Image 1 (tube, rainbow, N blue to C red):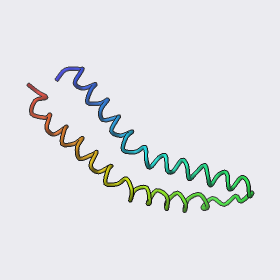
Image 2: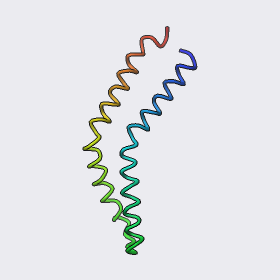
Image 3: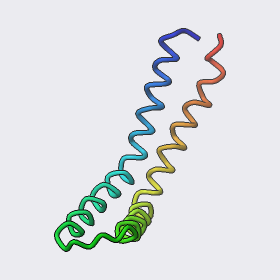
Length: 89
């Protein structure tokens, strides 16, 4: 196994990580900013006010994109396991 293969595997793993985690992170970001703007506009400084909407929004996002995330990860791991026999030749 040469250096180029290791770098390509690491690059692909990082890309899959970004791809799979981005929907959940974007939902958390949007909800967090929205709740933060609401809190700043109304001067409500409750710490738990931002937690519950984030949990609900992320659960909804997981219900929407969860099957796609699982399918992407399964395809990635099938590719990795399929490459194992040829890695050390």
